[in-house]
Image (tube, rainbow, N blue to C red; front, side, top):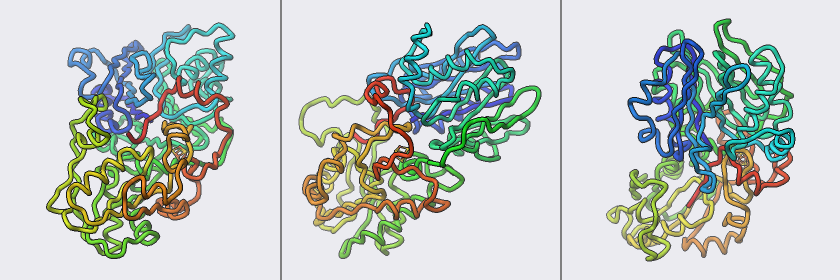
Length: 466
Ligand code: SF4
């Protein structure tokens, strides 16, 4: 998963983009980058591994001049976490330059790349996004938006794209609409972002979502919207609302906080915990769902687990002193809340189960009398090929164990998952138009023919769970 942010028509476009990227840090922590285009159409790029706060030296930011900028935060699988794979891509081509920032995963990238390589194309990264750059470079259409549309014909999978072709910004969202993309206004400037929280930080107002299948171009001639991509059923990612997006964002037109609370309330209806005395969240992504559970069940909501926010992803377990060590670095229980109580611990999802098992052990160690695990999504049983890099099915604990086995494995007194129907009913606009393939195994499109190759060249995946 990644975050994308772009500005058209502001003299401090790069500085605004850096701010926007701070708000999209949760969508990717492995690298960050900004491309800016100056008044003379010259493009400059700054990209660095790590967090936005670490990535841009003052001198580099000062050099990112011009009224157009796009930025990217990236999260990938470990193997492809290199500076070559950081975005935005900036490529010089015959007719000028192409800059591109991509959120999503293309499902036919392996085939498209092979085709291009057979025709002599040379790639400088292992990202699927680079395929799109090559295709744009070869497109013959006159208009910038026409070139992007031509390049995207035959590209399958998930993409929200910010592209700069010379002095035009072109944004595109795939016809299924898996990932969110919004447009905002800041005085006379136009701003694009993966989530509305990034519009808030720069003081932009939300104008509207970029629609699935829509391509929007902005340049000196004005704004144009075209519908040149084949239409497809809408399959917005339900996991954005369950886990991924920030609760202060509106995603797919609805508040993430509201949908998470609705997930928690529905969970309390479907899987109550009679006799429990207190509810708490696995912070931070489960906070709103745990609040919803507490509201519905009438139980007190407590902050019983404290998360250390300063643990980087690169943390290496200093000793081999047991499976709990990694969890302990990240979380600590508040004994005074837990001791002697029958507790409900709410999490948004269970992936490999390692973290949950460690947390249950911590909570028991803090004196909990009973631990009732409640999960505000359905069991994850299948891999995602649309931009969230869930592990292979063999590593997904709910795909490998029965409910009873998993209850014992996690060490809880009871385990309750939300049903798929219950999960979808909590979405802001009702249950229709959502992808739930990782929960149901029902993929809305053909899955990649060579998923391991795709994974190795993954552009925009986020690993979920420890
Ligand atoms: Fe989202 Fe799951 Fe669909 Fe992937 S498979 S897009 S994570 S709902």
